[in-house]
Length: 158
Image (tube, rainbow, N blue to C red; front, side, top):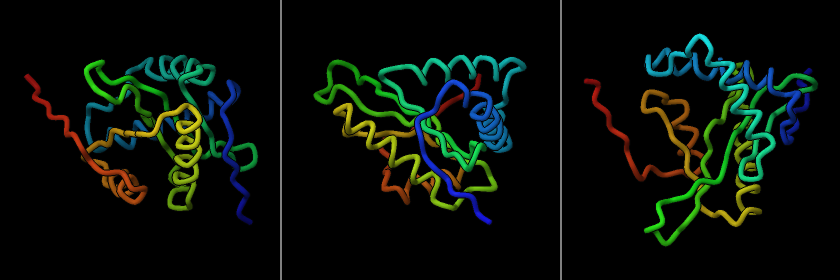
């Protein structure tokens, strides 16, 4: 029997479950690019980071819950462009993760829908997400959600 998945605002008690999803997300990315290797205490820093965002007025954290299990999360917040631009703020989806077992079931789309609604409530009408070039699953997801690339970050290791 498939359990019903609900999308709700995260609470501090969700942090351990979100942390597990974050580790899965980071390990998934590490397999594609060593830059995403977690430090020995990275999970502690992330726990503090996500806890701060749960209680922030300029951030939202949503979880997808299947019963007592958190199977996905979305962290998004309002960011500011440099003051020389006409548009002053934009929404940034920092993380959107769904555990492997629950991918391709519409949970990511539902999490993003909640974040978009939250941005609209805040008066923010542009949403951005950063996508690793090596993550084809994510690239396809964001394109399916209607997102279009507009910048590319380049790097050089010296």
